[in-house]
Amino acid sequence: MLLTTDQELARYVRLDSNDFPDVLPPEIERLEQQLLQPVLGTVLLTWLQAQYDAGVAAGSVAAQLLGVVQAPLARLAVAGVAVELQMTISSTGIQIVSTATHKTAFQWQTKALEKTLLRKGHLDMVELLRWLEANRDASDELRAWAAGPGQDYRQQLLVSAEEFSYFENISNSWPVFEALKPLMRRQELFILESQLGPEFLQELRDQVRTRALSVENEALMQLYVRPALASLTLARAVPELGLRLTGDGIELMVARIDDSNEKEADAGLDQLLAARAHEAQRAADIMLEKMRAYLARTASATKYATYFASKPPTPEAIPLNTVESRVYRLI
Image 1 (cartoon, rainbow, N blue to C red):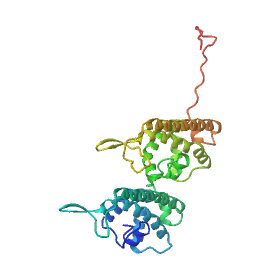
Image 2: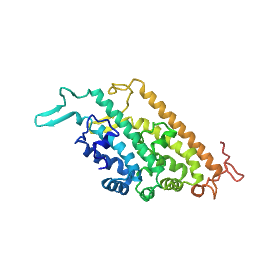
Image 3: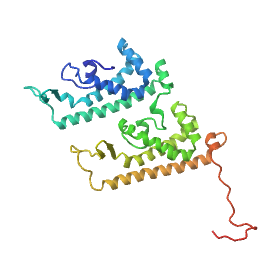
Image 4: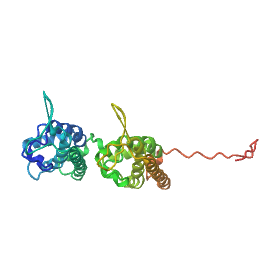
């Protein structure tokens, strides 16, 4: 594990005593595999673990990386076990902690703490990704990470919550962006491929994945492709992510900012959601139209050559009536 002591935990989560809860290690191990491994990759994660076990030198690249890794680990792990920390299980049942000087927190207090730790922990993940990108040339290990094939987060044209929020505001939310990824892939396949052609879309994907966007492709991405993809994704996300499939059925997933969130959605909320989805789709349609016009003006054998070569030729107009026509047709 990359976080094993109460001193490390106390840097990010307030502790009442020098105590490392025994329910934390399984949760930390789970987060390392499910949250960190897709971002760091197996090789970099294994290297960091070896550095941690051997004792990282202060100020080293490993120490800096460990710091930005431990922040989300600590906060998200404690959030994940907050309920378990309040009770014990024995052969006589489930008991809460209550003594002359300590008692279990109220439910609303526990939920507030969970929400705060989750929000901060997911922002820590955004900061981890930002640090990795900013320091990808700082060591051989980070250069190998940047060049590695296993970077799941660079498999789509919008690669981070920050990048998505620049065009459609999701408050840099890591969990929201993760939930949007399947929808983004679908919009790339269904919409962008038909607009750009499969060959040119693949060129953009390859250059995004390898951080090698050409100047002209970067201009196209920033002006049209990224904002169109963000709006297309949001237009689909509003209706689709409002529902969640569970083992018990289909649940409504619309939250309100108050202390009693667990109640039915307000009347008229469906109209608000439909209006938001419609506005996002309208913005996407405008961007796609502008993108097509831009490519029609600028694409040539030397500029946007892949698009120019793969774009199907415009069929020649067939005249409605000619001198040889036996029947004269009206429009």
